[in-house]
Length: 272
Length: 95
Image 1 (cartoon, rainbow over the protein chains, first blue to last red):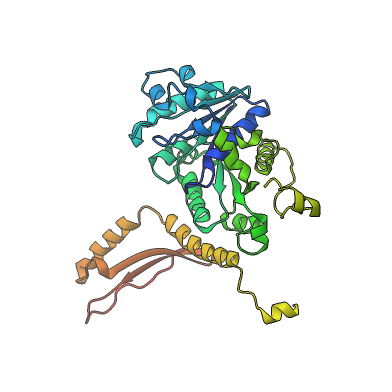
Image 2: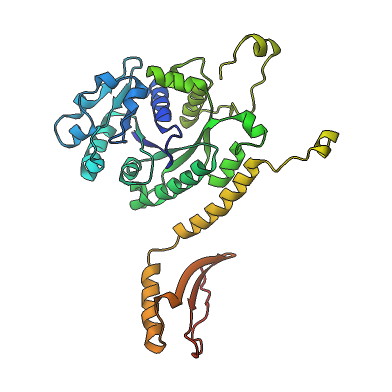
């Protein structure tokens, strides 16, 4: 059985690509054969975050147009077994992902992979609709901030009405809330919406809390999914989220500010 | 409450303001999203019927679907030209 997971948010810049990369890597680390697909035609970035930008030869559009077959376009990750990256094209034609072509490719991928992660573009235009259409599950990436929460609400509505499951009146797309760039210190000061606030407003089950962390930028600088950084709190949080997705029970970490020891505060910079 | 809080009263936390604003705006947007596709057509056809009897134009008829407790309320407002007696009033239908 294969499962298609869309990573979506409505709003841009909340961490969809970071999440897609981390999530796909996490699933592969747990032994599941996984592919992560970039649906952001024209603004391809998953390749950079995954560190395989120099290995892209053929892309999603080439496969759809029949210029290459799937195996020629799939990039095998050099670090993790069972992990593949399917890059998109840099074409300016935003409607290049034709419906029938995407249907055919998804059907083919379903035969090969256990998990298919779809990294959605921002917005609610055709690109985002194509990315979520085949989804069995959705990871809704949300920042604790008004515009992101509102846009997430909008995308939740779209999942319920425009997905293939909705069209066919099948079981609805499984929804998972992932709260990213969370800052427990600011929540405690009353400057940031809390986990409970966002859960209450969106009423979607919480998959994880990813703390705001400098290590996310460092990881993308070097093209390494942040989940592979053992010292990164965000990486650990992604690991927890993947485990929960697979049915494990994990305590929800990073909800409260980390206590800093006196010595660490003076002599060492805590990894944040 | 400490003496400090007494002399320097706190402003309401901005996160609380954010939550309240979101709840209001989303309640409104969700209601709009759930309005069925037939609404524009219904409005047009109702206008045609009313126009048979009274001289009305498009701006004078307003159809909306709202909620009152557990029931959905289909509200039809027709603005009458001066001198005419109203024919239609808001009418609730069960959900």
